[in-house]
Image (cartoon, rainbow, N blue to C red; front, side, top):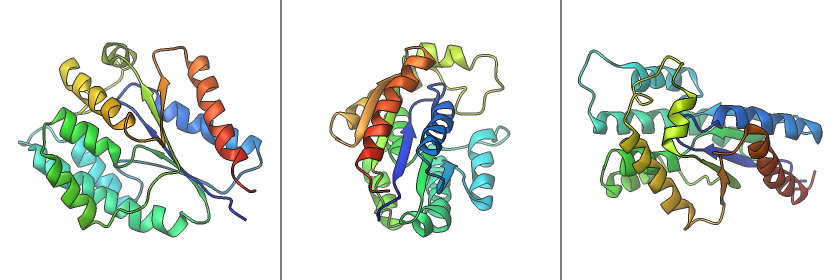
Length: 209
């Protein structure tokens, strides 16, 4: 019997990814699905969490976009080898971000050449694809308004223009990939949950439990 899926939640900072990840876990448990692993990127393992802190909170040293990119892929490799690959055939894995974040943030936001992302994807042998990617699409102005009172990390402190470029690249990817489901995250949380619920229940119904 197939009782495992790989679900990824994507979106710019402030789109509500963490809230929706936790909501999906609640939904799965309502269907008596308990073999669930929740993770996030960058991070998800002890080594990856240390890299996450470097990526997000380095302030006193010049931090190039290439350094950021390499650290993100080092973190992703740790997550792949220690969490995703060992559990992909036995668990429902819910991930707050995955590889298309690198395309949106590093290519769209930072302007890094796509060939470097392609090389790194091949280098870490990342051939594991999600069953569904839920992209929470939100106006960057609204997103940054939502997080204005929290202590922001290095990336959250980027400009509106940066997040607009990231959002546009997300949408560019989503239009070409059928497994990416776009949810309007400008709406109320209840409305977003309702739309997400429809996608997840459809996924569950096509899964033999």
